[in-house]
Length: 393
Ligand code: ZN
Image (tube, rainbow, N blue to C red; front, side, top):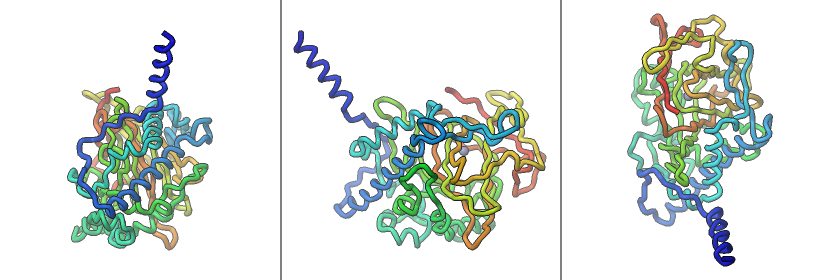
């Protein structure tokens, strides 16, 4: 009997120390690599881990809250009075993300089975920022993605023009960044230059006229480090769905990313410091905020964002000094207004971007439609209608 008890307790201990069971997406590239290729792959993997470690510490380093930072939940609360803030780790989806990051960071060798450079990725096009950035980094040169310049070459009109401007200003925009205090591990391109160069960038709105503003459509790109379409694609850890989707965004100066919404929750960390009087601004308000008009429709809500000459009151300055973290609830309506350049550097906004439930409901990002035939480009002051679909918990 005594022997039995001893062996049970040993078994329990062995279990708690054991490696988590990682289930990868089915589309991981298993092509065998040469020794020198493996070395290059290693360098990217090391920076993927450093980025995820930086994200982990951003979310968990004690700041306004004992277990992490406070996030802006709404830039204007339900009383229309002031911003609403909350400890980010109060949200179950964020807690789960941290738990899954813990599993990856404490068992990197096992998690690596779900990593590939997306060198032969076929789901959609992934791009290097430009030829210079690609040539300057051996990993990026080896992966040899086409560049955003290739993508926008010969494309007529303002979308193409903005796309080429983004590509040529890319380095100076991503270098003008800093990781917000109190986190000490730098996850910007200034330290993790291989990652920011070799990750696959997506010109997400170039082909999407629903995004309304041509300069914004060309002047925006994002990349995914971890998540269903990123470099590290883990479907499950110990039987739990991994909803974490973590990457980065770059938005060119003098652009307005119109009001938009989606089912998954999302958070952003600002990496571009606030340097000018004409600073970058963001807005997020819950779909049921009384400042909007809500009408119940079949399987959803039609929400009107009223025209306003003082729409700027809904927006907050976006910088690295304070309020660098914001959290968007499901279907929250949000927007980013990036200021024009105010010095000899190109204007821009760089963020760490994440979604926490990237494997449930509908992942589509939807843009609110301008009401009453508002002209393009639209501004924050125009009236919009947002057609929200219900989500399942
Ligand atoms: Zn969003």
